[in-house]
Length: 86
Image (cartoon, rainbow, N blue to C red):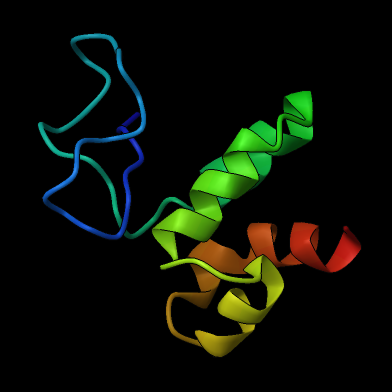
């Protein structure tokens, strides 16, 4: 529905194309975590996990998600569950 992007709002989104009705005119830098988890679950492409790590600022994916505590937990649960299982 909207493009995912890095935590740095000045950087372009990760997607190079999305349909005209596929966004609200901005890249999502907040509610993106389930999208990364779902994309990885579908094709097991580690690029999606690498983008998740980058969007969190770099480091260990599981540790970064745990460090967020309950902040935005509803959006990060799927990715945290995936990180726990890897």
